[in-house]
Image 1 (cartoon, rainbow over the protein chains, first blue to last red):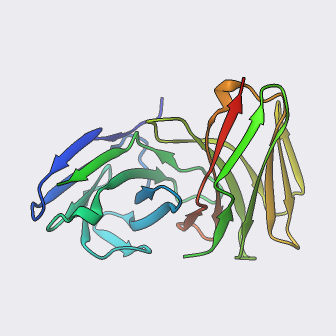
Image 2: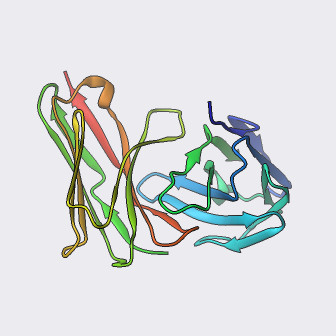
Amino acid sequence: DVKVTQSSRYLVKRTGEKVFLECVQDMDHENMFWYRQDPGLGLRLIYFSYDVKMKEKGDIPEGYSVSREKKERFSLILESASTNQTSMYLCASSSREWGTEAFFGQGTRLTVV
Amino acid sequence: GEDVEQSLFLSVREGDSSVINCTYTDSSSTYLYWYKQEPGAGLQLLTYIFSNMDMKQDQRLTVLLNKKDKHLSLRIADTQTGDSAIYFCAERTGANNLFFGTGTRLTVIP
């Protein structure tokens, strides 16, 4: 059974804290993605990675960074959390082959107070 | 990113058909997907269609693609309360890029 696992379902952090969201996949996928989901805005791509140590900015990278030191793990970092980063964060992975689907984790609901 | 648009809400009565619509802008899209998100969960792939197809049917689901108008629809026949969820369309324009719509919240009224 394929799996994308996000380390936390719910997180509450204080403004200014450094926050790490972890994602692990067990499918040997090359591509990994971090999305942010907000009501009425759908899924917006923050960053994606197509290989170890490789990353590309998505549509809304400001205030975020990422790390991919191993193929199976993709971390999203909020350098200094702010209240406007309160959201649902979804990690996904996919093979590089054309047409293959992306598999999603359960999501992390982050609240910044 | 690319523009993928959906209406935000749809309500139908149990047993009726639901039609969820999506428009996209990138004519080089190769694959188009429908994902379902149940409350508190991640997204799960429902079905997909390759851009050289007009229609795909899978049990209660029918996907129609009008490539000229860049319009994609998902029809759910005999809609059940368990179909209540948010439905996202997504387009893939390259090996790595996957763009999602805003999502349509389907509410099924018993």
